[in-house]
Image 1 (tube, protein in one colour):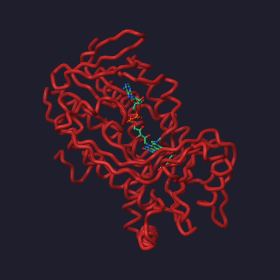
Image 2 (cartoon, protein in one colour):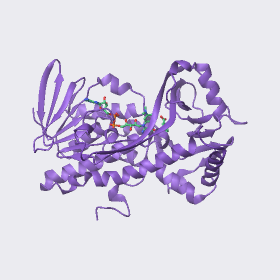
Image 3 (cartoon, rainbow, N blue to C red):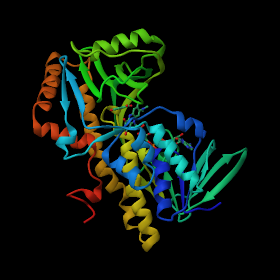
Image 4 (cartoon, rainbow, N blue to C red):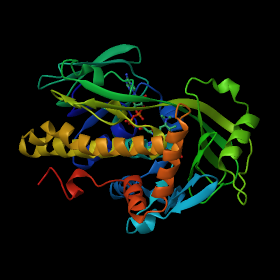
Length: 399
Ligand code: RFL
Ligand code: PHB
């Protein structure tokens, strides 16, 4: 088997890369170890930056998102029992975010890829990478019982945090930088009406809480818990009591209802440098993880693959690998800014029970400052809505 680009992983990064390459007339094959039903049913991210919304629209896969997604012009920050609206639309000169679930983006991309005749191998196993430092790297995999091999010009490792690609970058050149937080998020999907027109991020003495949405009938909320806690300790009643204690105000009550899904995830910040070795390029969660407080993970996956696509297109148009050899450098500039923002939001909004009373007062004072300074609100908004891509940036490396 042969193709131009072999892609491991059918998450947002792998599917969007394949879609972008197809629009440039470049062939790819995707290998995914889960079934189509599993990838289309996994509940993860909810918030799309303005740039991600634009990307889905200009590449022809945004139609359902525009119909079914919820456009939000701002968020609300709550602390000391008081809500503060952040009018991001105004502070960023007309930009907004879209609340549209990641698994719906996945459905739209899979449908578009299959309709265009793409080869996506679902339920593969034993995926391994070979000769990545040669001109013809190979991917071996098992499918329907038999072992097969694909030879390609480039491999894109879009296989998430636990996939095999990152480990192919030799340890002697791979540096992994990370921070683990003493926080976990207990996330629920619940059958209730929409609680609030915009997301609420609440810093409460009992811990952080986030009110989000999915559809008019199903809502997504989170509470900060111990990352080692067991979901079986959390009855539906206990979850609602805790959520209400952390977000309700005198005039605002949280509607409750049946909880149809619940789980606990731990939180980390992680970056692998470089994101390239030979003809292997890693993108999305394979290369970096952000804590979900800034809503950046899926959006970063989308910006990585736009940088990678540029390098691959330049190679096929000119034969030059110059752009490709700068993939890491260019992608990491935006990644580190998103890392900083995600770390800052996480630190500012979670209750750190190891903090002294001095540190707690400093944290509340930071929230007080952020919500009262137009400069600070503008900075928060431009980061949340999404920073420009490298070639849109006033201080671009690509001049
Ligand atoms: P994915 O989505 O993990 O996809 C990787 C794919 O690779 C497959 N795979 C393999 N395939 C073949 N062989 C192997 N050996 C393989 N190993 C793995 C996997 O099955 C999978 O299909 O990575 P990608 O594409 O880089 O996308 C990253 C995003 O999924 C992730 O960053 C976001 O979900 C993070 N995130 C959020 N991001 C946002 O932008 N906005 C949000 O609001 C947001 N909220 C969240 C989040 C993540 C969360 N969790 C569960 C960690 C909220 C939560 C709770
Ligand atoms: C979500 O709706 O799942 C969501 C929203 C905002 C975040 C993280 C997750 O910061």
